[in-house]
Image (cartoon, rainbow, N blue to C red):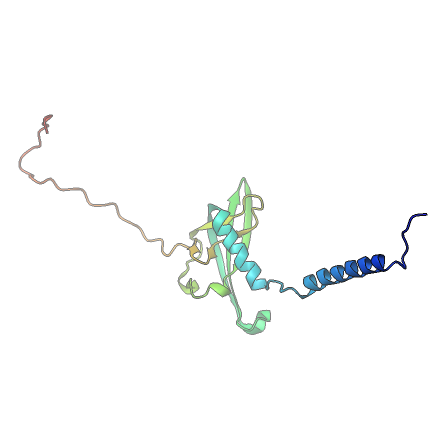
Length: 164
C-alpha cells in the first residue's frame, strides 16, 4: 500500500494551507470595492470617446425630473436623441446629470442635428455628451459666405505675366 494517509501531518498541513488559500481568495473577492454605478457610466463614456464611431443624429427632447420623480436626491436630466445606422433607427436617452457643469440644456435646441458616438459592435451603446467631448451643436445660425475679394486696381484690367 502507498504511504498516503489523512492522518499524516504533512497531508493535514497541505490541506489546511489549501483551505486557507481558498478562504483568502473568497474574502478578497467578497471585500473588494465594486465600482459604483456612476463610475461604471463614466468608464462607458470614456470608452466610447476613445473608440466610438461618430455619426449624425437628432436631438428629440430634453427631460428634467425633480428629486421626487425619480428617487435621486439631485433629480435627473436626460437628453433623448435618435440616429440611423444601416437602415436601423435607434432612439436613445443619456443621463447627463453628472455633466451639468459641461453643458447648458436650457440653450440646447430640439430637432437640430447632433453628433453621436456609438460602439461599432453594439450600436445601441451611444452617447452625445462625455467628459471633454460634446456632440451637441451650440447654434444652427446661417453662416454667410465670405464677401468677394476686391481687386486692388478696379480701373485697370489684370494681365497675365508668365515671368512672375
